[in-house]
Structure formats: structure tokens, C-alpha cells
Image (cartoon, rainbow, N blue to C red; front, side, top):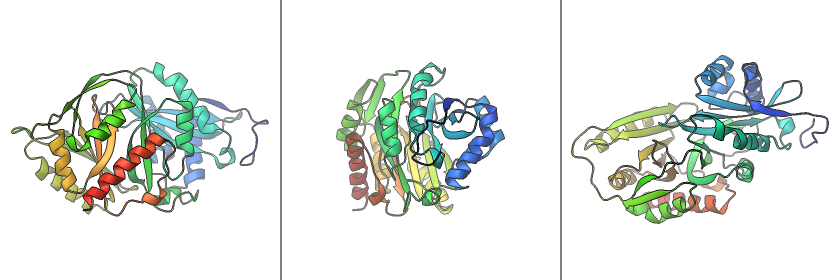
Length: 338
């Protein structure tokens, strides 16, 4: 079937990944991205099968009648809480690019995922170098946009499909499967933006201003993942103590020394002192990213920093809600540059 053709002669089926699909998944990503896709597990058939057995990955594939894998996306654990899954790592064979493959996957996820034990929330991270995946996600599932990550993906991941001229931003959109109402502490500087984001969330929260200072005892505990191929560091602050700034500066210096271009910081909105933490990071050039429902069991907050000026001109978002969040992110970045 040629790109843009019809599916009259094809019978496609969508379903959960089977071990015999693993090589086809690797072939699909090689066809679409060459060897440049940052999530290397898609190229590793044995590793992907083992990750599925651990429930770290819950992939969905679209196959032709003869079993060839021509579409793929996966739910995979992506947060400190094991019940938070990301729906991502998507690829569609170029020959089927206009055949509604991602729509099939999104619809299957909507029918199936709420019945999978252990999934509390899941989120999408569609790229913003175009709006096609954003449109498919919002058309087929009740996603709620809550954040935007600037410059997350390297341009070289899109060289083969010629769809990006620089680093690529992603939107973050969530769906609640198991509701978890709880208290959120709101940093004063971001209160109007929090009000907007939470007004559209598909779960209830109660709110309190963040007025406390950092704890006077205890120790800061930080976990970091560096994604070498993407040149991104994800820094999770699990505990904040009086030594927060010292420990954070040490970790930041380490990851920047490894050639990282983007540093993301994940913080807890359960902290009464979250406002002081965001102020400290803002003074170091970190800016608003958005809200992460149930990221730590309770909600998280994303801040981010880029070594270079973000690729703002190539950020394309589909919905009015995403445009508003992009506005929050860019205006806070501008504040850090003054």
C-alpha cells in the first residue's frame, strides 16, 4: 500500500504485544528513525520481551494480516510511582502514515487500559514539531494537558523523516484511571497558572498556599537519570533538607559536565515548602514546566532549564489549553533571562 493510499486490500489488527512481535518492532523503528531513536529498548527484542514480563512495558502493536508490525506504541513506567505509565515510543510505517494507525492504537488504549491492574494514571508525551499526534490523542481519548517540556528530543532523531529543524518540545497530557484526591501546596509565584491547569484536571484536589521554609533537619535525596543520546538529565528530588541548594548545585554541575543540554527537575507538590524550592531553582535559571498528576503517588511539579535558547519557533501545539500552557512556560523562561 502506498503512502496515503486506502486500506481496502489490507486487514489490520491491533492488540497487545506478543513476544513474536519483538523483531518486527525493531525493524519498524529502524525503518522510521534509523538507529537514532532515543528509547533504545525498541531496538532490543530480548530486552523488550523481558520488560513486558516485568510489566515495565505494556506495548500495543498494529499488524498486517501476515503479522508484520506497522504501528507501535507502549505504556511504560516513567515516574517514581509504579502506577504512573507513559504512553509513548510511537512509530508508524511510512507506507501506512495516513491510514489512521495511531487512532487505532489510541482507541485500543481507551478500551483496554482501564482494566489493566496497577495502572493509576497514564500520560502522553506527543512531540510538538507537528500536531498530528496531539490531534490523534485528543480526538480519541480524554487527555488533559498539564505541562510542556521544551527541547526534550534531539533533532537528529527526526533527520530520517525530515520533520524537525532543531530540538523538539513535547506536550504532557494525562488521564486518571484511579482517582486520588489530595492536598496540593501551591507556589505563590505560579498560583494563577496552577488554578488554570487544575480547573481542567479530571480528578479533584484541595489546595493550600506554600508558606513554609525548608526543613531545618534531614538530608536532601536526589536521583538522576541521564539520557546520553537525547542529552537530557532528569533530576528527581525525593527529599529536601536544609542542604538542598548545596546538593542540587553539585548534581547540576555533574550532569552539565557530561554534555547535557536540558535539565528537568521533578519536585513534590505535597511539600509545604515547595514555594521556596521553586524560588531557589528560579534563581538558577529553571522555569515552569507544569503539573504531573500522581507522579509521586501525589502530584509532582516540573521545572526545566536549557543550555541554549529553546527552539520556540518550532513548537506547534494543537489545542487552546496547550497554547495557554506554552505561554506560561515561555513567559517564565523570559523572567529567568532578566
